[in-house]
Image: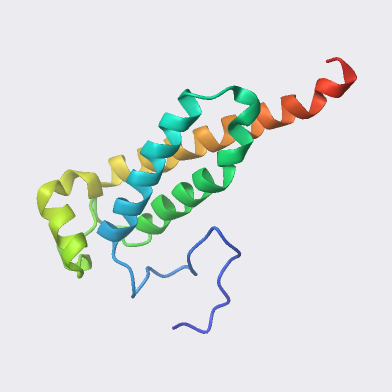
Length: 131
């Protein structure tokens, strides 16, 4: 454990990559949660989207954590970063998921959904004034 005080949740840790959870495990959680949350968002009225803000914030944090494993001078997370059975299996199944472009797109897309939830929630708060 580092001496650095971690940021408040939903973030997972400090500036360094996790030494407990590998990027494949983060992707497994983020992917499942993003998919299930997305399906639920599509199937419910916008007025209820705020209920899923925490889940999407968690997805953003997990994808951002994956970026910490990406060396600045490389275009993909190195295979040596995958130390768990789950992580290695996910990496072997599709190593392209750990390329810089895909990782940055996942963060960008998850943040966009989170921003949409916040926008809809802010609009919903204004309904009492008739606007």
